[in-house]
Image (cartoon, rainbow, N blue to C red):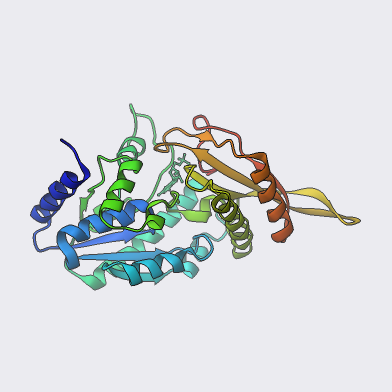
Length: 317
Ligand code: XMP
């Protein structure tokens, strides 16, 4: 009979057996999958695990600080944190192609991760929060190319000659959340919406600059704030803002404006393989729109994305 408790016991035993006295590293992103992976592995092997958090400069407003505060103050994990904002923004300078963005971010991540792991020494395993749907979606299906090169820490194990530990490989997201609660992670870590590894980098259409990141962050905070205030945050799979690469004409007072457009993307899903746009109340959408246009300098139009996956994807890039 499958219960969360028996899953934990079996996994702990298997991890101890596999790892022995070796050292394990885990790339923490602050997301549910890597947090639960770290907690699961820590339960099994304690301080043989070191977690590495890399701020790629593409995080939401205040997010890196909140994640680090949580891990350093309330968890028993060993966490190394690296602020690589300047490095990533330099790497991404002038890059507009979505796959090239993903590739650059993925490679940058590998480079930094490798450096940090080198300092720890004697590392044999990489713990990774791969879920069952990731296993399905990122391998080529019947010979077709994967849809997007989801990076996470893809490529790292081969380069560093590390063996993978993937304790969540057979689980769906809702099961991962239950596991996390069972392992004692707080609700706010467990009920965080998914956030992609390349972060806001793939939510800025076109070139990623500090100015454009700043605009997107301000709009994104408003979307999340209103979702939470009005009780919708946990009802949906993801809700976020996207910055478009066009400007449109608007009017303010007696004057003409020519400014940015923000799209709001909000979807319902169980596993991200399919998704439907969320039927949010018009008043909630209205409040988000008014606030974004009033509060975020440089934005004069907000649109709501009403496409489902497939044929669209959840992220715009
Ligand atoms: P798409 O856009 O492919 O997204 O429908 C499906 C789910 O995956 C997330 N996503 C990513 N996660 N690295 C990640 O860790 C990535 O490169 C990446 N791209 C998309 C997306 O937010 C959604 O939850």
